[in-house]
Image (cartoon, rainbow, N blue to C red; front, side, top):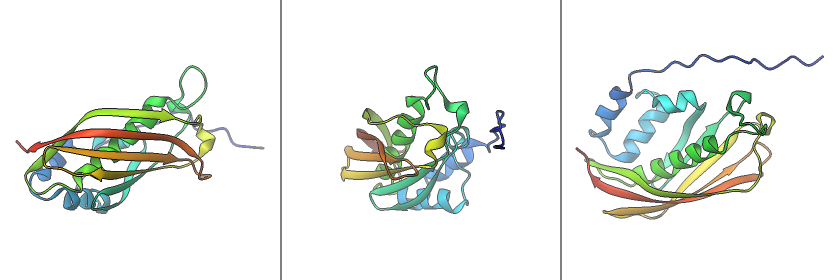
Length: 166
């Protein structure tokens, strides 16, 4: 007999200001690597959406995400907003890895193409964001999401504004 999936979840997180204050003290790559290493608490959104950064290098970041039924929409699939948030996260963090100390970014746009549905049974999602063109005023990036079976489920492109950190 198959055990029924757990249908409740508790989300906890640390003070998000700890990480945001530290962001201005290091390069973007140093910051993302510190998040991966656990020396900086992860942003609360990662706890809520069950995603985490797993690797980073200059111009590229990889996240994983564990979808479950709590993320389903009315038609019985994982909500596209989860996939879009995952893509937005890797796009922004990939851009961040190219930024020097004292520089910040924000998304200007994101274009997402959903290629296949995601279900809880799709397993771990892997998202990879890659900078296509870094810049001192704008950064251009692209990203993909694959399911546990290696099937491409979504792609995205984004333009990110680069500016001095406040």
